[in-house]
Image 1: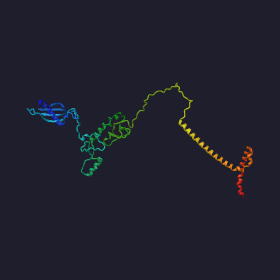
Image 2: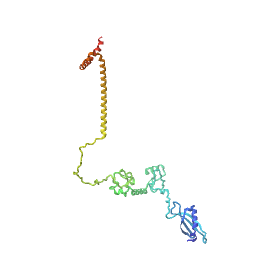
Image 3: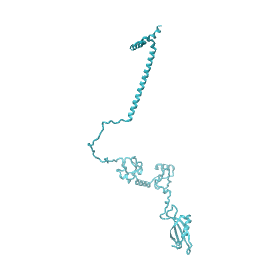
Length: 335
C-alpha cells in the first residue's frame, strides 16, 4: 500500500464532495484498497435517500518519486448489498405468455421457428393464390412439426393434462366420455375439447388421458346419512296438564269488528223507526184536519151527553161523514 496515497483522505473527500455537489451526501470513510502501483482507491459512504449500499469511490495516484497526489476518477458505485434496479430487458423478450390484453398487438415475427410456409411460391400469381387457399386454408404460414410438438408438451403439462389432480382422482379418462370431442388433424389422437358444462374443463382443450368427476359413465354409491341412528324413546310416565275448562280468549280485533257491525245495524233500525214515526205523525195530522172540518155538522145536544154516548156518537159521526161525503160530491152531477 502506498503510504502517501493512503493518508490523502482530505484530497479524496474533496473530490467526492465535488462529484456529489453536496457535502451532506458524502459520509464517513469506509476503507481503501490498492488498485495498482502508486494507485489507491478510497471509499466513502453515500447518504443520499434511496441509495442504500452505495459508496463514493475516489481513485488517487502519484508520479514516481513525487509526493504530489492527483485524483484519477471519482464516481458513485454499488456494493454487494446495494439496492439496484432490475436489469433492463428488451420489450420483445420481456413480454410473456398471458401478458397480452384486449387491444394489444404483438409485433410480427418473420422467422418464427414454430411456423412453416403454407405453400411454396411458383411465381404465378393465380397458382400461388390457389395453393395458398387449398393447402393453408387462406393462411400463409401454418403450424410446423416443431410448433405442434411444443403445443403438445405444453398442454400435456398443464392443468388439463394427465398429471392434473382431477385426472389422477378420476375413475375414467376423457377418451371414454361422451362429452369429449376429438380435435382434427395430427392432434386428434392426443387432445380434444370438453363440452360438459358441469366440468371445470368445459370449453377447453383436454388430453385424452385427462379426467374429472363429471364423466358421462361414472356413478357414485348411495351413502347412508352421516347422522348417528338411534332407537326412539317413549316416556309414558310423564303427565301433562291440560286446561279444558277455561275458554280461549277471543281475538280483540274480531270483537271490535262485531261490535262495529252491531252498532251499524242498530243505527239502521233506529233510522227505520224514525221514518215510521214521521209517517205516523203525518197520518195523525191528516186525521186532525178532517175532524176540524167536520166539527160544525155535529148536533149541539151531544155536548151534554155522557162520555160513553159521546164516544159512540163520535164513531157514528165518523161513519156518517164517510157515508155523506160521496153523496155531497154526487149532488152537483144530479143538477
